[in-house]
Image (cartoon, rainbow, N blue to C red; front, top):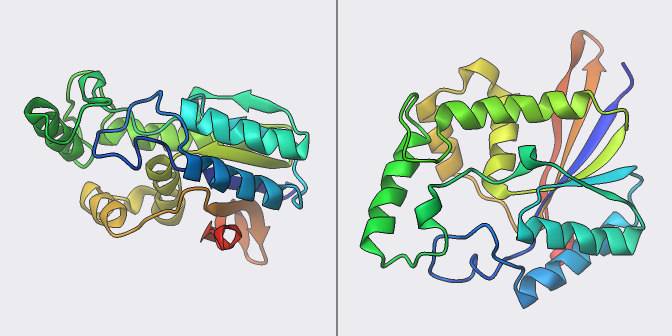
Length: 214
């Protein structure tokens, strides 16, 4: 199989990223986030890719649109690259909201507890299944080089799944999410390729490169 290259980018800073609230799905980019998106767009203009694929949430959509305007590439939106799905009640609520705070803590626990679910949210089983589906989705695309705008937590999930496969236990997943971070508009590069004595597989090439932010 020919090599496939995926340029992954986390969205620019959103208004809710910078506020003491549980982020809502429709939170737009902040002024800082717009500038970050412009910086990664300038960098993307030097990359050779065929199409932008983006989560349809407001912050990713705006980031992708800025990249598209600079590079002249088309955007395709896909729900498979949305952020971890939190209980609907939480979105936009301040950290001081007692019910939202309690629900958040229970939901966080469900992300590391197989079978546990809080209302209409995504749990540990769901997010690993979606990470696997996202990689299959990318493998099956006809394009050889893609630029994907997504979210920090979900992108890290994809990376951990690639690196550890079925060894990614709930406890390891929890620790890796807790002890890793990702800058807004950080660039991560995955390659699907074979090695000298290895079958074709996804390989992490670059992680969270944000040199474009200065």
